[in-house]
Length: 368
Image (tube, rainbow, N blue to C red; front, side, top):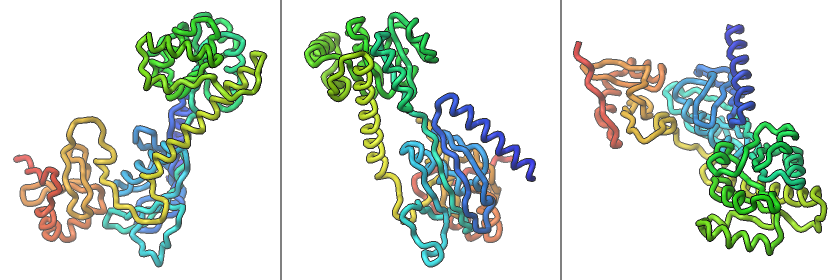
């Protein structure tokens, strides 16, 4: 068993490294407390990708949806969190302000506590232009911990910097494939309008322009003539950073990168405030999350069955714990609920018969 655990740990580390190399966000979930009966152990780990895919083991199906939802919230906020899944009374597990508490939805009534550590890649900044200011900005952007890409009509100077993401020309679709959060236009007279239009037509959250106020106003008028809406123009920040009385390309780049840092932090703070309303951190117990609702994606309706033991919704198509009883199928989220049903089937069949909630009822068994 120890070798198996070691192998699982190695595979998680390998996956973690691949995601880091691809600049994809993820969260590592570690069990820091486990009270029996539970199928996990202290030190057990799993990795959750931003799309909700879970690798590893931190417990059975009853806790899976809660863990995935909490990990995705941690990724979105870029902040670690502690999560407790338990039905222990307050006298045993006193509420703590820094723990997000959830009810244990399974009949086992075990308890687990987890630490979730997200890894979120630094935002990507796309620098447009190959001017001395643009080149210096590329260097400074990396020094302040941001990822950098670049685009210009002449790319040789950018390639000489050793940048791995260099685009030729100014194309909004190509920009979006790099997914920059911020774009810095430092063309300074070499294709200003084309570069700025492509930047504003991209999905970047903000566009910073290295230019005087007079030139910036002229370019705003040019963008309106090119069909950029006033609403999108509000994403343009010009001049690019605070006034530091810059004269040299190095000084101009320094001011522009200061503007990038300011906007980055403002966007992070806005995202944290927006996400805080959905995060519980006051120790109050949050109702259990139905796994299928938390994990299903797309517009295709999912056939669901209400588990009569714990009340959670089960995806009929992927359910692994099924019993045929009285010519009908009963679906469960985990072995624990299935075993509990087998101890008192008539009781739980009566509960199942009264389940509504607008979801499909029990499905007739196939005739053999």
